[in-house]
Length: 111
Image (tube, rainbow, N blue to C red):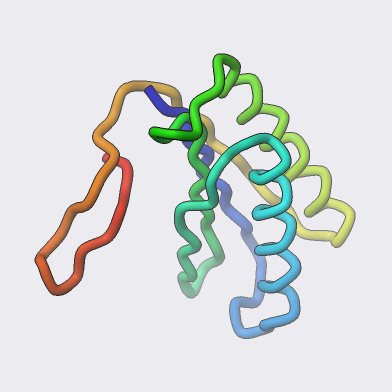
């Protein structure tokens, strides 16, 4: 059982490394503060997406869903302070957590 935050930053210029550094720092600090793990950062031509996971093996808390909502709120508020809009989707459920992919391109993921 895990809770995953899907954080989408729209109208962000992905070619500005200083802005990306700020968003990364915000998401990482918020996740750490609540006991979550920043799993992925994905850059597209239309924006930036982060995945933060709560409840991974060895990192479980009885209140992971509540922690994820506190994290989501913090992320939205801190991005507003730097005039960026963050939208967050939250999903809780049972999923596979482990290594997937071809032996030459494996990664740890939630599925």
